[in-house]
Length: 171
Image 1 (cartoon, rainbow, N blue to C red):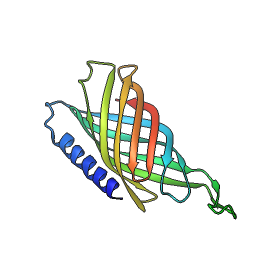
Image 2 (cartoon, rainbow, N blue to C red):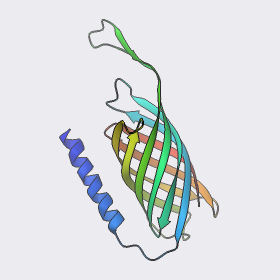
Image 3 (cartoon, one colour):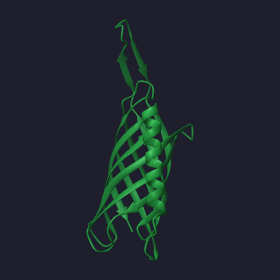
Image 4 (cartoon, one colour):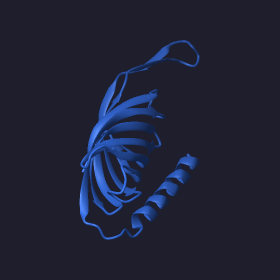
């Protein structure tokens, strides 16, 4: 638990520094995303995986972004043998929403290149706000045309999920 608290403080500090950095003056723009992926799960009953699909929107001012996402999260049914091997335990499939509020920093200048890496930080709320998670993410947008591209992202939603997502991004 002490490691999670220290890591959470580090991520929060880094996010504050990134979001407080002065960006050059640019007109505001808008990004929309649609993505899906899989997650490795820890500490949520006896579950060890989840599937995610969702979308989000972000307003950009230069290299900085502020946005929100809504995901549908599906935890599949699981059955496990007890440690004493005297029985099993099972959990039914569970479906719930996850809402994320985040800030982002994009590297490089648009429209200089086809790829634009980013880092994000914020908070996610799983199951109608019943469980809060600290978000730390990073990835790259690969622009295939002037207005659309492919997004690849790895995100940690601490303390329980590590997700890998891919999807579409639109300007």
